[in-house]
Amino acid sequence: MEIVNNPAQMRQMAQEWRAAGQKIALVPTMGYFHAGHLSLMRYGREAAHQLVVSLFVNPAQFGPHEDLDRYPRDLERDSSMAREVGVDVLYTPLAEAMYPQGYQTYVTVEGLSRGLCGASRPGHFRGVATVVLKLLNQVQPHLAVFGEKDYQQLQVIRRLVKDLDVPVEIVGRPIVREEDGLAMSSRNTYLSPEERAAALCLFRAIKAARELVLSGAKSRESVLEAVKGMISATPHTNIDYVALVDPETLEEVAMIQDEARLALAVWVGKTRLIDNTLLSESRLCCV
Ligand code: PAF
Image (cartoon, rainbow, N blue to C red; front, side, top):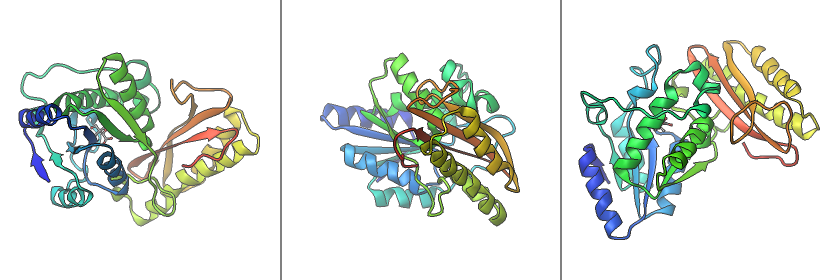
């Protein structure tokens, strides 16, 4: 596995692979790998000749009072995990190379970025869309793989590549969970033992919502009331939002007609966790 941190070198390698007819997969990450990242990498490994994993803690997607400085980082650990999965290139550009002096260009995906996490993290998706477009230009992948835990991010990126005619396939992969159901996240490392126990309420609420819908509940009120009730009853938690949305437009829906996405963001202590699931009238979806 090669570690590359120069965007020009990365682009040169990608051009050579393409000229040789090789298929390239990109898994964009901010590092501190867990089983969720590894499952995206394994997918990319199977799907392409060359697998590039980018590792860049993108300052443009963090607000002024967010956790950019304390975001977990461990390049040595990440490198050995990536090597084990068979990654070809770990691409680790520096912030100075991504946003050199004089940098002025940002991409905004208007409607999809506004609600849910976009409402409480203004500018977040502008930072995500910008860095993802830059990474796609640098790595020139045929496919790019993202996790469904960041469901709004996935929809924003799908829209971005569609609207800007970026020739790449965007692949969304299912959420990977701890054995007890907590969605894998690098931010789980912030949780104290009490908070870790409390964090399980997100998955419990998701399971309860799925059962409710399967038993015939269709209205937004009934689902949200049950979910909010379960979370509010758990110590150390504070709800940022709980929403029932159309899976594609992310607009709020009043009733579940066939399918809807339940999305939640909850503060557990000082850590903001997100989770989501597809709610279906007719089938028990995997979460
Ligand atoms: O999901 C993430 O880790 C980041 O938002 C991404 C897509 C790598 C962009 O910085």
